[in-house]
Length: 240
Image (cartoon, rainbow, N blue to C red):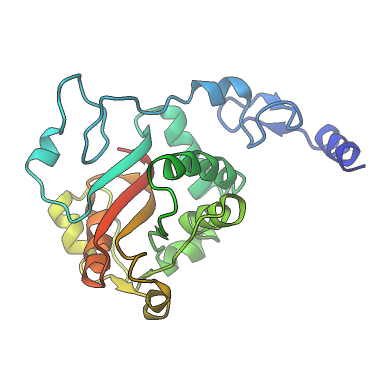
């Protein structure tokens, strides 16, 4: 009965691929509003990549120029995709600004693969959204992905951070300017902190959508470090 109902829904309200616009059958093709062709064209970053920020590198190079001269509080960032891939950029845009919430399942699935293979059983901490952004978009885009990770992949999600101060748009700012813009804007959630055991504080994963200069990851990491987290790893959908 359920399959018959889904079949009728698919006939009456056909879904289209968010990238190419082709009509897709969600029962036989990729189930997250992507056709199989477009899904298969999404290329994850391959080695070699910078061991610190994850940007693609040429063979024989361990760190990019930026990371060689920068000092971060977190251990490393691991990004799934290169943001300069127009398909990746389009999907993130559609998710964040066109409220295509179905993509949260897709991103959660891909992120779960990375977290389970590299950071299994570590607490996952979503980067907090600003209230103004949530009201404008109508949802917390990272929080929703975290909910999927918790519900469908059994991950331990800890909402340890809160955005307390409104900050101006980060776009167009360099690393130092972004750090200054974010300074003091991230606060610890004291009640959630009390739930963490001493063992859980040893290693944690910070979850975000795009790693650009690392300023957001750095500000969040400083707050986490100050409150007892020892090793902080970043996982993001894409690196710009």
